[in-house]
Length: 518
Image (cartoon, rainbow, N blue to C red; front, side):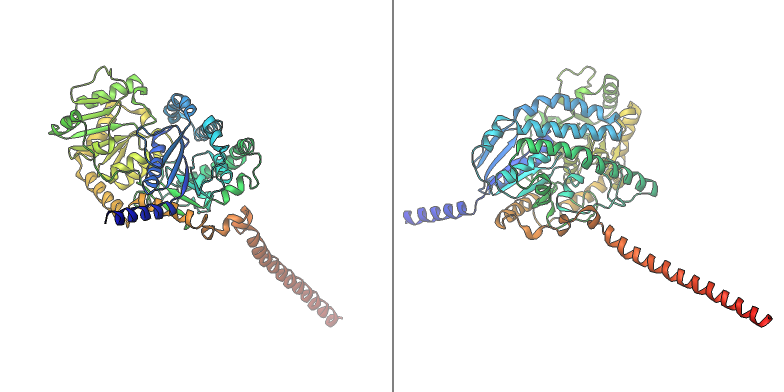
């Protein structure tokens, strides 16, 4: 009997191996929040038995079966500067912000491709069935898909944007799709639509006229033997997975190969809290507040006067506060404030005594807050944080505080507004119910679509014909010019003929009158 079960196990192992794919994941940014999204997918694929290789600055702390790290440590050398730039970006104009992000993307791209570990992998002769690359202004990295002769899957870590919708041709009408960097919703006034159109047009022009030529230079430098070229590789993207969900934002058009998998990083199974944190929250008889500015921004970088305003606000509250603060020495900290440079955020938010989440408004943090049913006070600093907090205010589950003018009064008013009005808790509970009501776990959905692309050799049947058209043909400008131009010409010709006939008839009648008079 023993030999029978041994044979069954061997057969199962062989079948699993036959269905396993070799997958290359690329999560190049130094932002841990971006990595958390990609890492969740890569781990999920490895757990399904696929052979996963991951290029990133963050190797796993605990080795995992079927998961291999290709570490890019040089990226982390620019982390400190990027964190400070993120704090300063709040004071930048739209133009300065775009060029700052463009510069960061080019730096990340070049640093990743020149890493010895990446160069060694490129020279290894390995083959992959799929290449999954985060889409965050690192387009030259798409060349790895052609290099390894594998279909490309894009991963939009903070939802839909110009950078990833253009890969598969999903439309983004600026009449109701707000720019990622603006605090607007899908219901805009005429003035907001004009502003949204202006910013989106500026982003599009600078992206293709200024930024993409620089990415092509990097692509040509590291992939000199490419046959397809960067533009064609982008247009041949097989699939884009979006860290988004319509219940968190608003409905918008997507092509079949653009899939929403927002929240796939959220752990559906709770872990026990460290004993000290558990005790602090359990004994919070008046409730608790959790405050974190995310993984990229550091609370220790907040200027002294703003930090003092925050501390005075916390001191006046009856609730306990857990503040992610990177410096253990925090002068002026009151007894109701617990500081640490690390908190298990999801497990903290899941505690029933936590009544409010104070956040920078990043997509991961706001998604976790909604999933776990916690209203928010947001202090957005840059990027999509303003957009996320605009949605929170419109949705009635959050209040936004202006970082540049933050004071004890404005901060305290925002906190008390959310804590003392039960409508905020009710709204976020409704949002949570909608968000959780999905036919399958977002991670399972993402894994399915990766496997689908691998099974169908890049799934070319999902490719939109619109990707093969130029700007003029895609927008039917040539057809409209011919159609409406032709109608206009006929209209003018008819009017000219009628006019000439009228003039001729007029002269004829006039000549007839002269004949009668004579």
